[in-house]
Amino acid sequence: MSFINYASREINCKIVYYGPGLCGKTTNLQFIYQKTAPDAKGKMISLATETERTLFFDFLPLSLGEIRGFKTRFHLYTVPGQVFYDASRKLILKGVDGVVFVADSQEERIDANIESLENLRINLNEQGYDLDKLPYIIQYNKRDLPGTMTVEELRRELNTTNVPEYEACATTGEGVFETLKAVAKLILIDLKKGK
Amino acid sequence: MSNPTLVMYDEEFQEVNEVIGRLLKEANAKVIFLVDKNGQLISGVGETERFDTTSLASLTAGNIAATGGLAKLIGEKEFSILFHEGEKDNLHISIVGGRVILVVLFDNRSSLGLVRLRVKKSSEELSAIFEKLMKKSEERERRGSSDFPFAEITDDDIDNLFS
View 1 (spheres, one colour):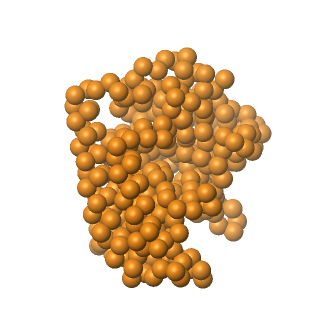
View 2 (tube, helix red, strand yellow):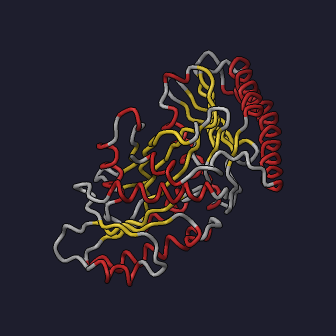
View 3 (spheres, one colour):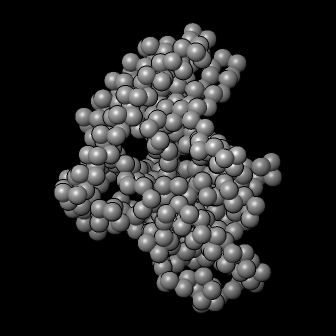
């Protein structure tokens, strides 16, 4: 649910990075944070455990510039990926405008990916959203690691609805901005339709 | 969609600012913020420049969401007021009209009792404004009014953002 403020001429949108534990959601945000000009970003907040596992969420506000005199701002959130944090995950999805599903390309994580994706659908439904109607893209992360599944295999398991997909390596930043741009664009196109 | 897009117009924005500006004085507070339940800052008055307002808004909404989750677990609809006491500064957080969050930051020049009393009165006024705002949005949507700023943007406009 975007927020349009005519008084301050701003549009704010919320993007949520979803995916199984240790798939690289926080790493995506960290890379974006590092590579964004200081005037275009706010502080990155990470509510994490002592071992740097996300406990509640990471938050990064970004401003992209103006469209027709309106400042466009994107608020990027990650969810905690670990299965037992489901109650927290649900909360982060409130008011979401677009979703990035970060999949772990390693073969041994395919079940975790599938479980997380199902969990995403269920949690969205509980909030009254339908994943198939939301701006939504998939990122196949960790492409640099040995023992990853091929994109075709991952697509068959995870991208049955044929949404835009990107290969990435979040630690080096490959594919990270492409993913962000793609989802931001889908959200703006959605806004254009006046949903 | 479970929630329609929140749209804020100039007229209501001024009304909102008047109410929280008055509350700031009457409650002897340092800063007052209004935050959407999804974490978007709506407005703020007082010493706002001293704070990272965007982070504050996001964390407040997270806080309200988490306590809301706790409330449901014990069979409550929500906890409508949260109070955080610090050594110097305190936060009084309350839900207004079911959808926006009012955050009052105050120190020992005020008191919890005073803040609660003043917040109660202002909440009613704010509720009425947001009620009006929702009706206005719904009406415009029904009329299919095209004053929506994004209705006419082109793919080029969007691409330019990323160039």
